[in-house]
Amino acid sequence: MIDREKLTALRDAPVAPAAHVIDGARCQASGGGTMDVVSPLDGSVLTTMPRGTADDAAAAISAARKAFDDGRWSGLSPAARKAVLLKWADLVDAHALELAVLGVRNNGTEISMAFKAEPVSAAATIRYFAEAADKLYGEIAPAAPGTLGLVHREPAGVVGAIVPWNFPLMIGAWKLGPALAAGCTVVLKPAETASLTLLRIAELALDAGLPRGVLNVVTGEGATVGAAIAESMDVDVLVFTGSGPTGRRLLEASARSNFKRVYLELGGKSPNIVFADAPDLDEAAKVSAHGIFRNSGQVCVAGSRLLVERTIHDAFVAKLKSVAEAMVVGDPLDPATSAGAINSERQLAQNLRFVAEARAKGRTIVTGGHRVREDSGGFYMAPTIVAGVSPEDALAQEEVFGPVLAVIPFDTEEEAVAIANGTQFGLAAAVWTANLSRAHRMIRAVKAGVVHVNTYGGADITVPLGGVKQSGNGHDKSLHAFDKFFDLKTAWIKL
Ligand code: ADP
Image 1 (cartoon, rainbow, N blue to C red):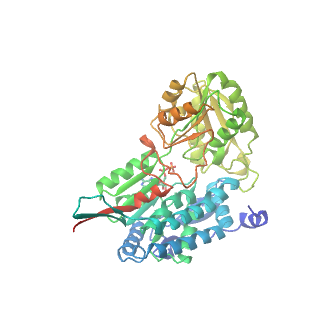
Image 2: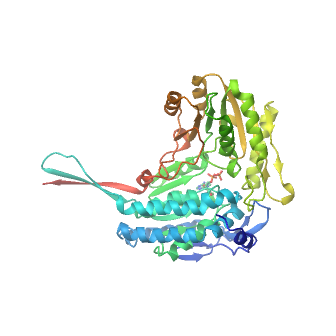
Image 3: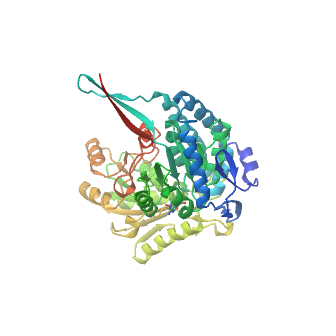
């Protein structure tokens, strides 16, 4: 529950200039100066943070390398690591509102969602992986008599983590939780427009007793700090959530440097497929609207393509329209707001460009399509539904990462599958149907990392999240997330 009094006290509190966290200490950039942190709520300068340099990244990597190699973390018993991480999770929980408000002022997500999805979920994620740390076993191979084959899991080393701005704590924790629980050390590069809360939880980790150098956070530009991490010979594993073009650069950097393993989560154009036999079309409309419009569509698994069976198309779009128009686009720090700000002016301009292109093609703007709350000085956009979209349109092929829903009618199950699979992406999908066999056929036929049935979103930490096709590789969440951070070592023994 959000304490409204505390929220009011926190919402305008001054924010001290931010600093990197390197080798257990706050430190300013070595020579890159600072960059303004602009709040998308009103366009004001919230504070400054270091414009990190390649030297800053190198200092953080060297601290992480030393911390890994001397065993101050990897050499602890898993139970000892668990104890520190559980304490950290408790501290994140204890500071949840402070973190949520800071995060909202930094990235614009509505607080009703950010509170749960950011600090509270990050704490739960850290706790989940901490609890697992001393419950993972190696293997004894079913090898031939006279031999013993053992499979050890060893922490993979120094992890570079590069994360985006939409859910910095949630996504950050998806990487940090399993990496640290496995015994790795980390250099984290937050997004330019959402660094403050990750810096803060790194400080809380030190308070919890995480040894210095185990978690380092370097702020700044992707092309400088992120690229230095990706190119480093001392980073063993790179984990990333962000755009496809950046993912491509990271793979190239790995190939140019030390072949570090690279795990990418690259967004999608996720199909939300509504059949006429859906059990409850009102519920489907409500959940589908939230599936695209929460956090103003700035969600990697957003259901941004609505494929709807033609016989119910008009009625369903009318229902969606009324849900969308009832959503309150407003002050992200007001708990009654259902959609907050767009993260940056650049992102808002990109969203509007997609709508302008659809309009120019003669597609129907059912609702929205425009900027709102301009007087605030911040960046806001009305929930937007575009109907009559062709599967080949940019709006049906490219990730907008904004509150823009493309509606495409279909006639048959086969056609729905063909349209659903007709993009470069394969992250998430949903199917709405009361027909059990159809639901299972669709789960198998749709190429995606997660297929929801009669719901959208909300899959919890117990299940993996990862993409297929150009949505990426590897998995966050669930015990499978550990695979990224362990090396397997075989011991082959003659008895
Ligand atoms: P978005 O379009 O969502 O901002 P990006 O892929 O540009 O997606 O950003 C995601 C993260 O990747 C951010 O932390 C950003 O700073 C970082 N990044 C951007 N460009 C590079 C790059 N060339 N090398 C490494 N990291 C980068």
